[in-house]
Image 1: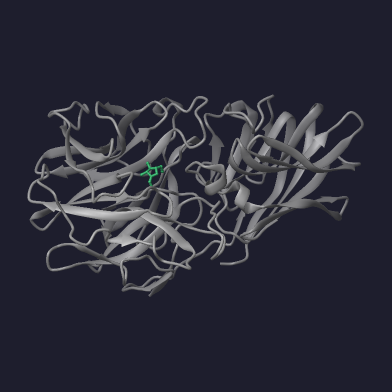
Image 2: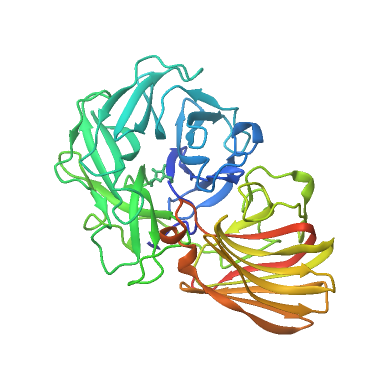
Length: 491
Ligand code: 6LW
């Protein structure tokens, strides 16, 4: 059957996958958002259904006032002896830790910390031993740990320094046949990103680099939309075919190297050559479309509403939420805003859902229930506290206004503000790859508020590792949201 990339769209970076009893499980990074580490399940490696999150309790992860793109970095998921493990870094506290569960649909344990630094931790269970691997200061470092306690059983030692690219990251080791295959990312998570590998007879090495590294990269593929392919994990489908799941991103146009939807999940078929080295895709790159074995149909969801999404699965808070400020029902969200705004490195009253595609129409009815003269309820196209476009219903001294506020870097600009004679309006955002258009509907009449370029929210401009999350929010008053729909037209 045929499938198209990305297989999971929107801000779901750093995928890691494991297989258990013919099901596949995948985790992704979540940074400052809570709950942390989205968790997905699949039967075929192409269709992924989010089944929850790994870090669901505040005590599992410190997110207090952490920067955007701080917090939870690149997780790895592994399974051993009846137990799932998810290992990750809190980059803000510089701690590597793992949690575990025996029930993938249930709660995960409290964190167990490991006394080895670096980022992108990974585990290898082999011969009754557990190897803990991370990247530190330009190399891949390893120690053996006691998986019950996290205690180190050996010194940490460098096992490979990569093929010479900058930012060696994302190490994963596999025992394939008699050999240990060590895979990594190099080049940084931007346009130079690539997958490289090395092989050894023993988990401690000596690792010999693949003679034709990188084994996968889109860095020279131009003009081309899919860029940044790297940070991969291997999986084998039910027919015995091998694949690599990587992150990658879609730039907004062929000649416009900006991306704002975040790093997404791509699936690329691979083969092993006679020496055990990876041959990825058709030519060492990741393409849009592949024909593979298997009896599946690639599904795509075109409409996200309050009714067909789950607050605990599809939506996320910014850092740790104050629960009493959220009343989330099947068809309604009532958000009680505090004085904390979206410009702060804090937890404003906000609940968001990732933007999955470029061409989108978002509609929501908002009603101000209470609040002082500066109370607002609205929708934000949010990349970070210094990069977000907000469309709001605002309470003023004399009544209400609808406003479009653009926040880019240090610029906080009210693009347009119109007086409205009601406390209930519909807010609309229409997007394509280049531009967001903002509208409000007042007493049945649509008014155009303005537009803004998507590239100012992109990682290239705004920096950071996240992607756009569309959030409902309230500040200094209470707003009720109904009739939410986020509809995609290019699926
Ligand atoms: C992650 C690193 C990377 O830790 O980006 O793609 C960092 N590469 O491996 C954050 O996602």
